[in-house]
Amino acid sequence: MRKEIIIFSFLLLASSCHKSSFDSKKTPVMEVNGEVLYQEDIEKILPEKLSDTDSIAFVENYKKKWAINVLLFEKADENIKSSEKIDKLTEEYRKELIINEYQQGLINQNLKNISQEESQDVYEKEKENFILDEPIIKGIYIKLPSNAPNQEQLAKWLTEINDVSLEHIEKYCIKYASSYNIFMDSWTLFYKIDKLLPQHMDSNDPMLTRGFITQKDSSYRYFLRITGKCSPGTVEPYEIAQQKIANILAHREKTHFINEFQDNLYNNALKKKKITFFNKK
Image (tube, rainbow, N blue to C red; front, side):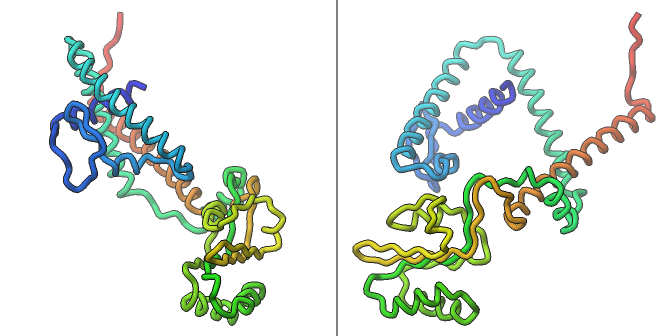
């Protein structure tokens, strides 16, 4: 909590040096006592998968909190006379920033590349760390104008996926489809495809297990051919878990390197008598 307060103070102090100075490359949303909040900054922290109503509520709440923080900092700055404690905390945080920056540079220089064998070994031994929270699918999505020709042939190609039919599907989509996505080689979150359909589907709908869904609205026909599906609660496919594994191994390597580096630094300082101990009576 103390660190968060110091970080926030730094950010406000930095921004106060640019009061009434707008960034011409950004879109201003509001200003409070010379501090400017930009649309691009809000977009960075806006959570995904929010409905339009929830997005509006989130943004309005964030704007209010941002304004309150600016006003609170101004009041606190006006009323806190003694800055000795704050100066001490600021100096401590400055030292921490410098140390972290130095150690990160050492890590970047010395971190070894992670081998495929190491990655596979972690996946096999620690599968409990790679459980799906959401359904994922592979397949083909097509949005087609209602009057597009040869739709029956397209449906046949989609039910009999092979190299030849896949080539026909792609050529057909290039010529007639309003939009399409062939994602047979990459797992995709189900909700990202589902939101493209006019009638949303539950991930447990039995139709999904059959692997071929068609829908239509007043202007378009939609095709979804599912060639692979993994349900929540099951182990992630290795290609999905790979990035998590890389992060796990990188964290372990960093921790090991920093601990070893700090121990060596301390022991060398002892040998060179750079550390003095004072005996207490």
